[in-house]
Length: 399
Image 1 (cartoon, rainbow, N blue to C red):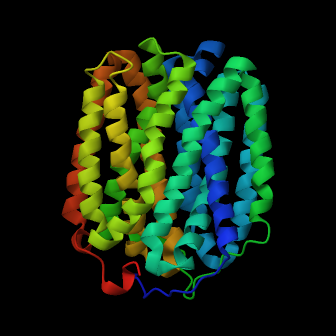
Image 2: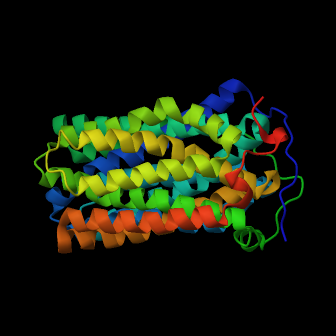
């Protein structure tokens, strides 16, 4: 059985280089946020159904699942730098393809390529961020989450204005240029191999750990929200009469609390125990999900949306820190990859089914079903949580 070794406390890269990797992550999420907010526009421009749009969203999650599940352990084996470079090239090619895409299969394939590329980059970055300073890992992962959210926040705004003033294709031209600009940030970055490299069966060993099972249940609950939002949110607001600019601004509103709260939330999870923080925040998110089914005013819906954003600002770094604790330093990328892969799989299923449910029963039924699934997963997470319910050992706390 795999067990987590003790963690070291040495700094591996300069502060400026680390900030560069944070910025790179933000740019990746700019692309995610932009596409997220443009799905209603893509549906209307090309005449796709909500089910077809669901397949576009699911493609990113399925490809991300494949990349993280199959490749993440190679970051623990010393190939993290190569993974970041190759992943970025995938993302550049994907957004360039979207400039010319005009059929459903092309949009599914290009969105899948973008998800695969991001699935290669993110586990490698998370490994480097964690092992750079394990004693403050909760805060560092919170900062990473804040940069990710900032990118996701900026993406819809950029997409809304560029699409309104110039057009859909021009939006993806800009995204491609941004990815090319940040590519030099990964040149020269070294992601050290684990002192005890994980074997081929590491994912099976990790998934047998009760603490990891709890982490996966927490992540699944979080990613249900992401899967539904990826496909339905823009369509849901559009059907309520919202403009493209309002849709973009609503997603910025969702992301804004995360930018400021996530670093402190990561520190709180490290001090008080990640499971306690995550369970409470997921519970609040569930109440918000239910409320969306009752609100028909686009301005009123911003209230639970903002509360939901605050809750997710606590959930994201808490779950990432929980995964790091459950995995141990030598399998950080493997654990984060497993966690991300399961999340992507859940989001892919949710996105695929979500579009169909929305066509079949409207928004109310979709929000209720999603919230019910999140409740079940929250209970599983608490049941299997074990030591994650308690504050971490003294040597893991922030100094």
